[in-house]
Length: 132
Image (cartoon, rainbow, N blue to C red; front, side):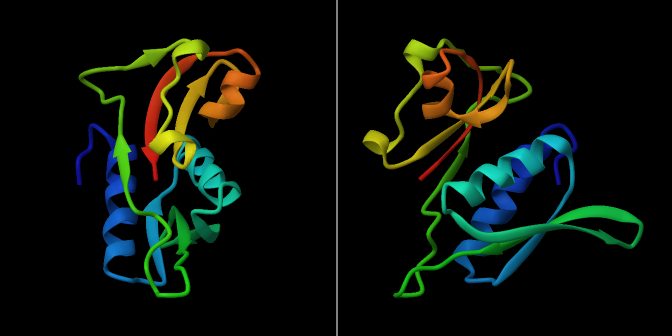
């Protein structure tokens, strides 16, 4: 695990668990990760999640979602902004992922939200990751 980028570690764990067809995956909890997981739930990329205490530590248990052919709903996840290279965007320049079929997660002044909601509210921010 990389101590410098915990969000990238979470994305990698979820991506690997989906490819391996696991039912659930546990990631260490933080406020930012919890907001990202809430967006994954509302956008339909995961079945559910819950925050649990395990061995004295808070973890987020993410229940993965698969389609009728047992293929993962999450085809890919990519970290955009890294600790060494922060990427910011105004609301007019927010990227579209797979022509609108994917989702970009943005950390704005009004909280962590999707690119579509940030554009509607006319706020830009740091591009956290993209999911498709």
